[in-house]
Image (cartoon, rainbow, N blue to C red; front, side, top):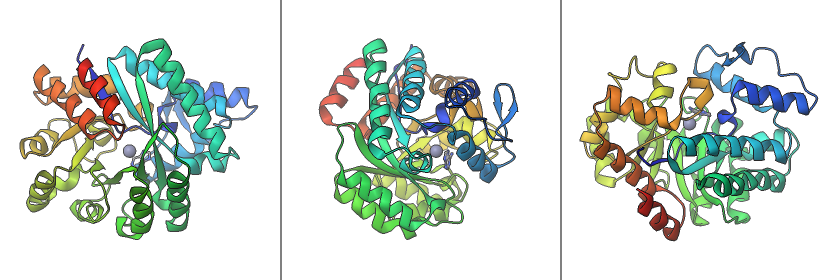
Amino acid sequence: MIPKAELHVHLEGTAPPALIRRIAERNGLQVPEGVFAAEDRFAYRDFLDFLQTYDLAASVIRTADDYRDITYEYLCACAREGAVYVELTASPDHARLVGLTDEEHLDGIARGIDDARADHGVEGRILISAVRNFGVEQALLVARYAAGRPHPYVVGFSMAGDEQNYPAGDYAEAYAIASGAGLGCTVHAGEWAGADSVRAALGLPVTRISHGVRAIEDERLVAELAERGIVLECCPTSNVVLGVFPSYEEHPLPALRDAGIPVTLGSDDPPYFGATIGGEYDVCAARMGFDDQVLRDITRTAIDAAFCDDGLKETLRARV
Ligand code: ADE
Ligand code: ZN
């Protein structure tokens, strides 16, 4: 099995319908109307509707133990597919919305990481993520929180949400705070908006871009990404399911890689898109012509681009 590393997956978005139902039940809650399209399938019509379903499903996640279980179950599933390292994107906003303190939230995730390591040898770290459409002020709070309370597992800062209506430049101060505190930085761009959004993201202190694939619309931008060695966290299944590209065959991942841009793979919100990290590697082999050597290279790129410390990177490299 090819060893795998994943840099782009949203923690609340890893919980499949069955786990969301189980968590709702033990918290004495009903899953809100409209979350499920079927027993084992989330409901959404398009990208913005997906973001709403995500928030509704996340609203039943209430306790540190819930976050522990979601983290543990996801990391164990990844380990079974050969993952050695996963960076989990955690959203303090979602935790605060349900009344969890930041400490409870992080403590739950950290326990999930520790338990998964003990049981399966997989390593996990945390990116603290703001949500663009929750506004600039809220993003500043999240950045200050991430910067102000160092935690051994919190290694980076990210921003998800609606890139089209909330341009990256508005969040420069939040990124300055996070980056100034030594956190690695990445940002969603070039998924639901085009090359201009990626260009705007390059004005932030980032070494990676979450998605970034629509950079393909601008040849000079592709050259700049390659030149600067900006790493793209690509999620082909998410893109195809959400309609960013019509098919795997038309996905620009191979072209971006051929242009010299470092690429990695992520499942984004796995059960929403029928994705897994192992599945993304499989898709690259089956539909994009990547052989085992290329797939191992992708894992090495992910380890190089990871925001964890160098000691852990060395240990991970030895496993690839
Ligand atoms: N939040 C969760 N998944 C996301 C995605 N694919 N893009 C933007 N924000 C998200
Ligand atoms: Zn994402």
